[in-house]
Image (tube, rainbow, N blue to C red; front, top):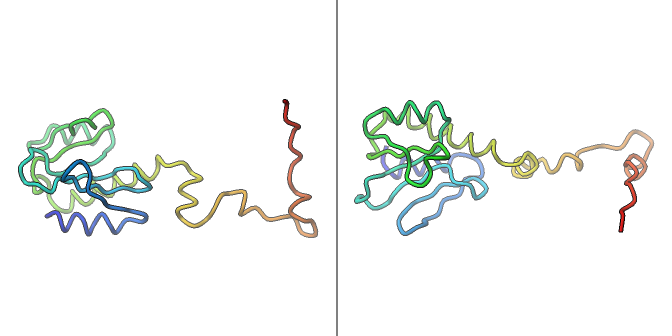
Length: 144
């Protein structure tokens, strides 16, 4: 995959944004949280980095052309030395897994807001024949 193919693929995920940070790193984020970083300049030894599970991290780091990502290895990020280090289909699966891992770490309430469901309490309906105000629980008095 080339950078443009990676870009098109990453932007297909819901709520994904892209921006250039740290000079020439194209970052893909969900709700401000990184899930893929690719280097736009061909010079650096790392071309693409992404998050993975601890098991996949260990497995991938044993392969040639894959190493722990600088600054992010403690969070199970791997770095590919070349964009063609892994087959395209495997790379797509790993990027999708990275997105999923980051998405699932977002607070549940925030995921619901992003999906348009709103907070859980806003979806609660009043019992038939009663107003919403009557169905709320009494709140304890605040101490001063």
